[in-house]
Every structure is written in C-alpha cells, then in structure tokens.
Length: 178
Image (tube, rainbow, N blue to C red; front, side, top):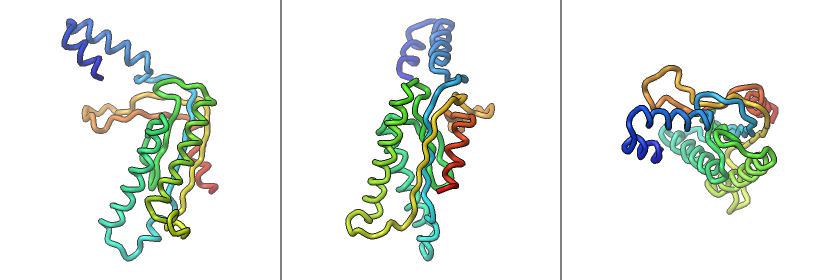
C-alpha cells in the first residue's frame, strides 16, 4: 500500500494505475486459483457458560477470545479470512503463495498456540480446571478461488479478502463432527 501511494505521488496517473493493476494481478486480489490451507477454529458452549452475565460482559469475553484467535493466526503467517459465529477462519497460502507442507505446518502450530493462549486467557491452565468453553479446530488443504470480495460496494469497510471452494467448505463442515 505504501509503494502504491509512493508511485501514485511520483508517477503520472496512467503509469500509477498500471503499476497498481499489475500488483493486484500478481497477488491475485481480483481472483486467482490458489492452493491453500484453511483452519476453522470455533469456541463451543461459549454462551452456555456465560448465563447470568450481562450481554455486554458476554460480548466482551467473546471479543477477547476472538482477538486472541485472530492475533495467533497473524503471528503464524496466516490471514484471518473471516469471523465465523464464535470463531475464525484462518488462511495460509494466499494471497502470497506458500508450499503446502509449510502451510500445514504453520496452521498446525497456530492451532496448538491458539489453544494454549486461550487457556491462559480463561485461567484454566493455571488452576488445572476445565475451560469454561470448548475449542475445536479443523484443517483442510486444497484449491480455492481467492481474491477480494466486495459485493460491488463502494464502502471499503465491507471489502474483504476471501477464499471460496470445496476445500474451504470442508474445513467448516468438519467442525460439526467435533
């Protein structure tokens, strides 16, 4: 983004537009078939354990957990593809391509680290107690169509980078088996 702004300020508009177009095409932001690894990580029974708490406290706890999950994905070189119910979808191998073995290794390490961070957050690791919520993650690798999804919106806050296809769907569906 900084390079695009720099070229926009230094180059004539047609040249700056061409540079930006090439960067978008190279990364496949406008749509590209890529081999990716997807992790679907979900908190279970979260709201059941929070009965009696105010809605504000429930959402504060959920947001803390989601923040930990999202940060962990970023720390392991992944991209948060989306927030999903009480969980997140992590993506490795897009928009920057990675070797599949490296994707799977990064996603696996991420899940292990995420589990440990969530235990620290809820205090169950310090007192050997059971966590107040369940936590599951699934991993799947395969081809996916990746790119920016904006539904034609001019509102940039609605634009997201996404992955579509059977490999993504399967990771999400596997979670229901846990």
